[in-house]
Length: 416
Image (cartoon, rainbow, N blue to C red; front, side, top):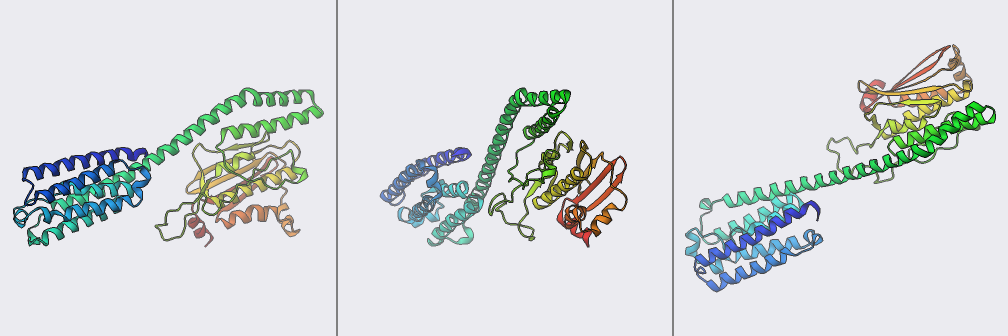
């Protein structure tokens, strides 16, 4: 039942109180013109009130609300059989009194404000038809009851919908908090055992030298990868193809995030802007962190760097291509740094290394020889996203700056 429970309990109290009020009016009026009929209608109302007090939550969204509306309208329309025409002209309210608002409130809680408004319209139409059929001038009929019933259905339905949304958000926040606590618990255990052992192996391997130094280097890379794993939020990914043999153990390529399946990870709400379905976003930080190793340092802000999912994947692939170039063309032991930040509506990723730099004219020569690594893997990817690439190289290293607009339409304007 969740957060709807208090609403249903309040409606139950309202039904019982309204039933008692209707019975009191019949008693004060001496049973109206036909006491037997009046008390029979009150008896039906009492039985139906009991029926509506005990349904299971699933029944409240089945055919029961419609039956509730029919039974209530029937009791309302039975008023002429209990009251005389004189009672109607004297201003006597229908025999059901405020009890008629029960299904309106129930519809509002179960199905939202629109359903509550429709139920209020049906009950108000029945009331007006009842009064007009007994010769009462429509212009003289007070509409306060109909207006209040309509407002009750809309307001209660709206508040119930807001309450359900708030409950769902609280559940989501609780799940995230629980996952965070579990991650912190695991991180503490890993830090106290695995990470310390890997750090010890790295330090001792460097001291011993030889093959032990290579083992220490691999332990350092695994320590950096494991530290990034326990510090970063998890992202479902599928493994990339294995890197070329020459790159293994030097720079680690991150796993490429899988594409969402149909109906997965996308919003089912209609697009109100008229531009088609909204493309899901991804946090670029999650795609860059796996690049971190003992020789690659990844720096990203504390706040998310949201990009359309496809754009984020392409930027991450361009960064991977830049690191591949460092691994292929720079000496062993070259370090690299990745810096990601947001700057004026664009996400800027800088890849810098401390290698010997790119000789002047080398990129143009590689393009003429058909080696299109930089031209296609980096510049081509970023250009397709409407971004720009700036390459600066000197004897102290190379810096590649990738700038991609956060919004796709900004990228289209740049290309045009």
